[in-house]
Image (tube, rainbow, N blue to C red; front, side):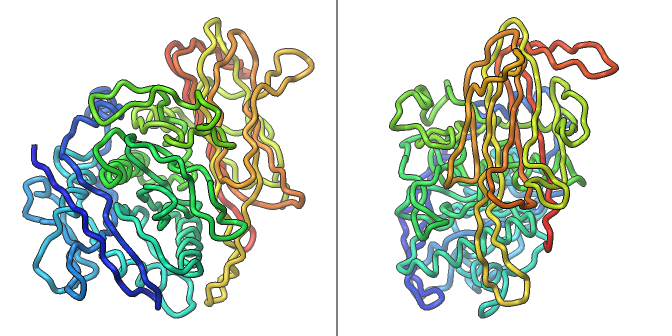
Length: 492
């Protein structure tokens, strides 16, 4: 096994402030994680039907490993045997012929022939970190971020700025480009002392399992508050750099499996979070054994401060994604099947949309363990007039599990955070009960916004609520449901 190790930290001037950027890797190279995250099982079951990333382009943004005042070193070694069918496009063009060992390792986990989940990816756009920030987020003085047709970027680096206004500007621009262009950003998280880019709202923040970090987000203002739940998911690998690259490959796999259909960033994030497992027996690199058992580890949106929604499991996520399309009852659909997903154009009371959606199901004689994630984006409320001048709004959506077996319904569990843009539930279900998952808008005024909801029931025997013209459907093993509420926002 080849080992790579880096401790570089580089001081660079950016937009008239000081920045410390470092990559987050001291990693050993191993494909053992593929079994732990369910990829081997997925590949075995789907075989030739499993996508490989052929239709997906990925951006690799890398911190430079060069010394101060030297040309940036960020480009992978494209002669590596894992990259025979991959074209790396140097978007920064620093002029140096040197290659980055860190970038090479991350690329192996994203597009490598044996280490990645997506060896079919043909093109990788390679950027140095500051160049990407300047050319994509800051495309001109005061202007809006660059409009891009690119849909996925990996950030196996972290940073800290010495001025909060610069950090806030970066977060708002990043959140805007994710929401407006469905440009998914998978970012590393190592704690609130190095918050760039993980303390933005609309990213997918990732960490390795060990050692756990429970500090949450950094605080900048009354929207970007301290202590929001991070990370979103964890991965059983040696470092956070590798964990980030692994999740990027998982996202690319899901994107390619549904191509040419496009899933929203909210949907992908919800599927990853609801698919995550909360108790693990990994081959290496740590385990989760006490998820939310202690009050001090419980977040107000239903997660664990150390592990987020739990460990990435791409098998679970694919099961949810594969299970078909449905609608909420209030949106004209009939009672939901035992598995599937729904798409609704808008939510929140404006333009004829609703402020409550319900998704009924019924448990069989064995009950089950329910995992649910509700995800929506921060609204940057930017008028699109050319100068980037956002007014961020975090909408208040709630998630409930309601027992409707008896005439008098009972709320069994609820997730009602005021500072996060995800709500989550993880709990046991009683056998032989009728339930509804309920999504509520708690906004004082009517709005129109989108959300994604994903859920699954572990190891149950689950009976779907009967639909009008069919028999009841009994499923053994697992029920996976995902509901995507799509985006149709006034003025966007």
